[in-house]
Length: 196
Image (cartoon, rainbow, N blue to C red):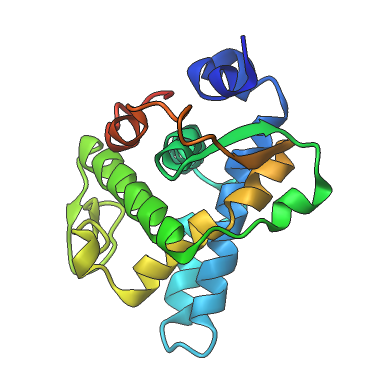
């Protein structure tokens, strides 16, 4: 089995057994860093810090850990939709790779759509405030209606992908446009909730 197939296609044997298992934690830490950066000087900073999604990985509820893992599962689909693939880390500079701005936005939109569908399957709905007990979240809306901070969270999750992959000893690689599967965008847009 090849690395890409085993990365997403065989989650239970590859994802949890090999280094990529650390990627869920890396995704979570990147999210926490972005939220803390956004909260500096904000009047509701304490509210952000009290959000259970801001807990350290070790204290994070299992449902949120699983959400981070599902985000990792979808990395391949987002990258393929933008013409990229994943391969074992051979270049230590790969963690500093920068996508083009239009690639970042396209993949961020795909990540937001994945998040929307994940949450909706779990019974969450749009609400004016995030409430875990009522399962409401203001970010459960179309991309165009997201707050600036929610857009930035999604953009940052894509910008951080090379670093996240490097933690799992993988790197981003540009695919030959003639080799990119025709179904890449379709796969990125289909969110079954399981491995890609």
